[in-house]
Image (cartoon, rainbow over all chains, first blue to last red; front, top):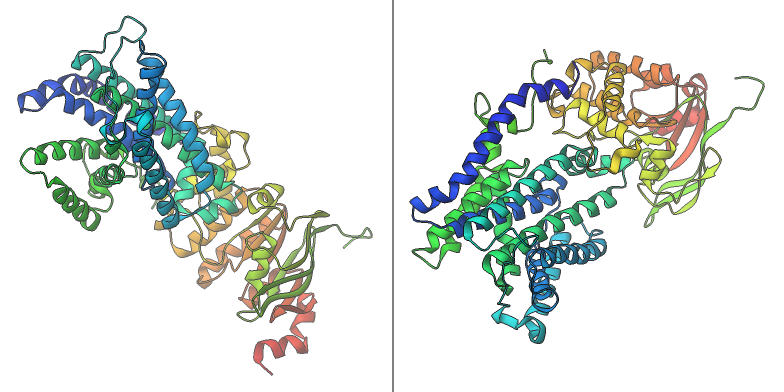
Length: 338
Length: 249
């Protein structure tokens, strides 16, 4: 048996089916949302948060490093893009978007280089500290950032001068396309030799060092990639809201993305997406009749940590058998035992 | 062995490792000749594992020098040391528990490949084939797709060795590979070690004295951080100092 080839063939049919159903779902989703009294806006937001959660989860679920300050990168990229559009290229969306991503990834790389030496809970503390630092710079630098009021006047200009993304549905499709690209890219990354090493580091860091890996440079690269994907979500959020808010980089936002990842399940790519869908939707739903939606979110978080520590996808995995998500889960081939 | 002076694979010179006032490794001069199996025995707490930790760069050493193939290596980080060809197994099981058996070995092989840092390629078939060859060498080929935490303790021990040799070491440091093994499982382990000694120099820390006596070319005895005796198995068996260290008088 050749590894790899036999496994891919087995799932090929399923994959094609999943892709077709997926495309239908993406197009139908906003219509479905409207029929239950929700909005296109929310549907777009869900996919933005799915990108955010996927990026965050590369670090948490696949490398085993927890950051409590990822919202800083989410918010910073939106501010970078907003400022760029206001001051440099008022006629473009694409250039500010790319600038926001590039700028944030660069700052993220510098910060990552500084903090990657710390481990575990200390790393978590340092990430909180840095996210607060970024937040307070944004709030206090009122001349540039307009402080707590945020930056308005952002416009969706046509992409490549002819693709109009002003209508909500067009922007939704644009976000979905970016989401699919991010998903595919991450799928390639986690299956590459590099991705396998990240998972080995997650499983046993010491051992990874002792078989000849420069673990710290892998961790740093994972951190930078994670910041990159987070900033992609950040700039998309800016052009959805057409406004940059300091709240987008607050600690609660960092908490939300952790909850999304944990609820969905962090050991595969489907988990964070599922988590983003559920939490974004619940947040919208609960906040429509109470301001105290954080209480409910906290309750859900505690429930999952205690009862389903592996999240929804992990739960399905445990009850394996004939569940439809099985081929999306990590494979456990029992045939060759015995 | 022959007329020419034997080549030295690994050597420590006045190696010291102190934890505060405790001299865990105290002035150890140790020489591993190429192609030999050199065992280190000694009572619990003698400093054997600490010595390994110093050799592999896990702990910074207090004093002394370590040479690998004539080069000083005491300041080289662990991961680079592994790439040079010094690799160890662990006393406490240290495998990637949630990954499959073949994946465990493949990750270790991949560490030698230039593609290891590339996030945009697939795992090439050659690496997978190499992994399967190593599984055959350690007798775990039938478990290749099992998640490694589901293996028996003895098989996990073998996998531990498999991961270590997948890095293609020239010097293999085995830290109590037989710990917790049954007689039966031991019968699986010994041929594996006998096979490996043909291609690499081995340092073995072990408590199972029968195994040590039957496998070793040379035995060093450690007690309270010092090497108190060194010689071939018969010499060690008849050494008065060794009996004292083990039996307390």
